[in-house]
Length: 158
Image (tube, rainbow, N blue to C red; front, side, top):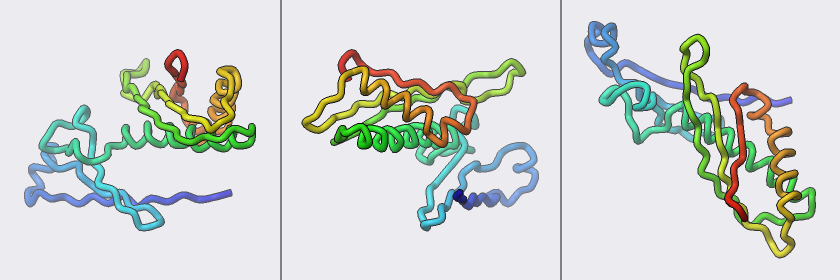
């Protein structure tokens, strides 16, 4: 079907191998995608303390949450358009939660999406919009690729 590539680059910045062996090395690295975009990445400061991580950079957990949210949004837009409803804007403040599994290993156990959607003149009912979200979840490539619980939570009339 399709292939998706990313180049991940990290290099030791410390001159001392001893510092590396003690875990005192920067986790900053770069993600480069097939179109040429390079993103500054790092371990999360919640996982690796400063100065060995950089909160200004994207961390894998944030990228995972963004990937889930983006896939859901793109699939929702497709489903809504096929249902005859224009989407004018779509904003989401997605939140991922890292917990420990039964073996004590951390994992992103849930991602909660909080979409705020503005439709064109033709407004879907709450039930129609719920169907669009269910279909988007069922058809999202990323949601179908992970064991993380992905939920959509909306305000009373969003």
